Length: 296
Image (cartoon, rainbow, N blue to C red; front, side, top):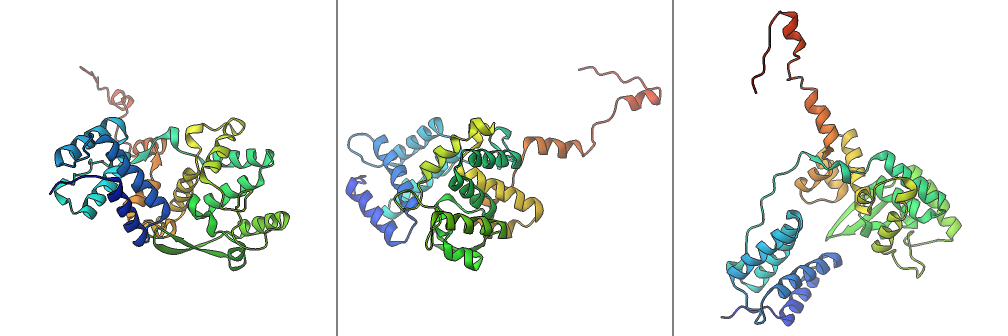
């Protein structure tokens, strides 16, 4: 039987994901990724293992390996749904890095500079929003669960990706958020809302954060909402070396995902290996009247 990728089949798969209660953002991502494959295919849209392998090679040449693997995961799951198991392909193998890139790592000092810049710009909502993400470790999409009621109980119940978890809100944050709610006359429901009283859009948050970079003297490459979650994870793990507990707080299903968040910078790794003291001091040879000659 001919394997053909059609718009109708993709719509059926979207309905299937909805019935499986997948998160809205997950469904949107899968749709985008499968559509990439749809546009890659030739006019007849017939699926063969050879074409999937060619698509994999295309991803390798045009995307970062992690992004390519993410797209392949979405495509493989679609192929499973369609019953075309023989067309599935393997993901690219990635060796886990021991440290993160310094140019994309947001330091605590830089985070503080961003908060100060937001306050000086009188964008209190943005300031509190960044502090909320960074002090609780929640995702941007989970801001809607920080409600007036959660300030009363001291914790928020997060319902995301088919899982429910409870996160505690720092007392200092509760205090400033209560004051903000009074000033904005927010008496119930989510605290962070747009002008139309809907949950604030992640794109708007991203643009506003980028707008702080110059005044805060922070490189734009480091400034995006998810990096605040990374900073929370790094600080949390540095205080309590418990990867399992951190995974629970972040809402990760896999500890391997959590390990990415705890990677130190290259500078920290350099300091660590320097402490091993495994390079011999040449001056010690002189003390013993030994001539050390390097013939490299």
